[in-house]
Amino acid sequence: FAAASFLRGIRFIQVPTTLLAAVDSSVGGKTAIDLPAGKNLAGAFCQPSLVLCDTDTLNSLPLDIFRDGCAEVIKYGVLGSRTLFDTLAEIPSGETLEAVVAACVEQKRDIVQCDEFDRGMRQLLNLGHTFGHVYEAAGGYAAYTHGEAVAAGMTQMLRWQIAHGFGGDFLLARLERLLARFGLPTAIDCDGDTLRRCLTHDKKAAGSRITVVVTERPGEGRLEELPLESLWEDMP
Image 1 (cartoon, rainbow, N blue to C red):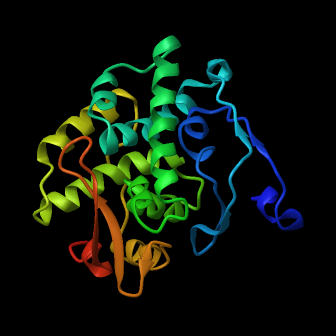
Image 2: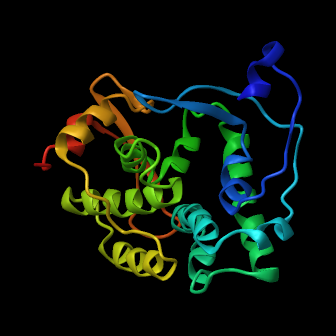
């Protein structure tokens, strides 16, 4: 964000040293800061000159921080690669970790090349983030990590879509088992008032409607535009 803003933009290199940054936030040029009203509301698109993902830097991570990044890895498995989803029976390490990072980066690269400015298919990468950003904001960006919020956000989105006739029962069962294996939450408590307040400020919302990602099976994510209120209508 600083490089995108200083002198109206300077060249910069990304050297991610967490799994979350390596597979997701370092690639694609999205950069932003959080505001009290919501997640990533002040930002820019600014592509790095180089991204260097050296998996040796991940060896020093505490296990909980490493697992936090696994939530984004699982997102890529659900979203775009049945093969990747099926390989995540165990926490990746060594050569497997390099292959997993490469698969996630390649998937995001291909999507970003088709939609750099997030007006179409790049919104698929928001899988789990609609509810996830609510959880982060509700916790003051301190109670839950991004990975924890995204993990619970994916399962909540699946529960919502199942309840509203979009299917996904089998995927939800598999996803919950996988997240539990990685020590990630499958649900986060959030009251209806907080949900309404945070979703209203979601940058994906336009007026009274919002675009969300639904998926019935790994590799089959699609975008659906819905009335914003449908995401909280059944909440207490």
